Length: 114
Image (cartoon, rainbow, N blue to C red; front, side, top):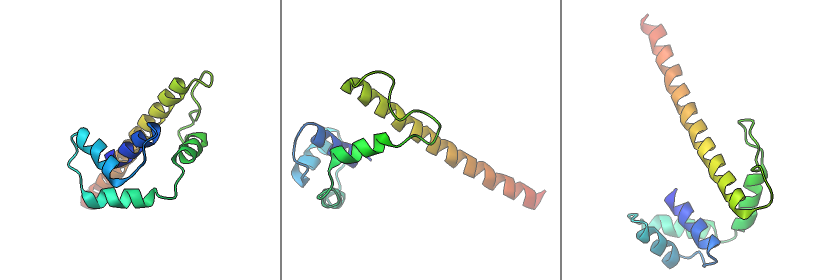
């Protein structure tokens, strides 16, 4: 995930997303960089308009029943905070789903062995 975050940082700062820049951001963050992952990400993002992709992702309503747009005006900072909240909510939901699957698996074993 840190590779994608590094690409987002480069995009936000107006820098070109290339292998050297991506590696530089990752190394600055203390990440043990895998060259193959850097190359794969750069190739995958070659024809992607990141700003458009981010806008589309924030326009989709959250599946948890929450609002996709943060309360308030068009303030860029508020939009950034809303995106962070959505990411946290999505991560929590994914963790909850994993926990539910683990519990379901445990219940099945309990039924087998009484």
